[in-house]
Image 1 (cartoon, rainbow, N blue to C red):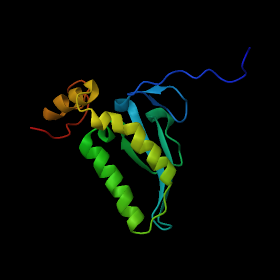
Image 2 (cartoon, one colour):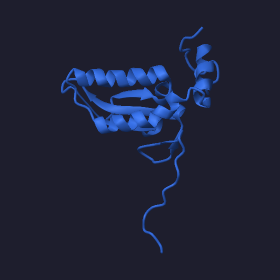
Image 3 (cartoon, helix red, strand yellow):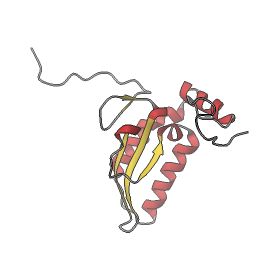
Image 4 (cartoon, helix red, strand yellow):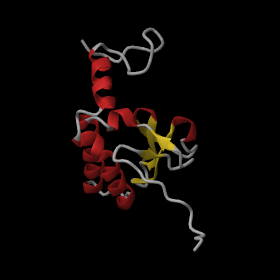
Length: 140
């Protein structure tokens, strides 16, 4: 029997998929973007994508490499929950999906990406960027 359904490939625990191009996405190359309207006190159109695929309508963003760290993950979701408490409207289904998609990176601090990022950050550098190619981010 031949099915007309598209082939669904297995997704590993540490796989992210770009919301725009549907290609695999590494946490260190991911960007979470969304539309924020302070006047209407609303957040919408959360998109996890490659930097090149960020929707033009997005006016807020966080880098995936930061969201994959426990402190960045907690800060992002704490800010969202705080805003909800202040009366902001948001796409709670999208936030729940993001919470679950990013949790494996945070719950397993031994992932190679996080360890490499922490090592680089301890020297004030960004993982994967040659020294001198970018401004320093702090560190020791």
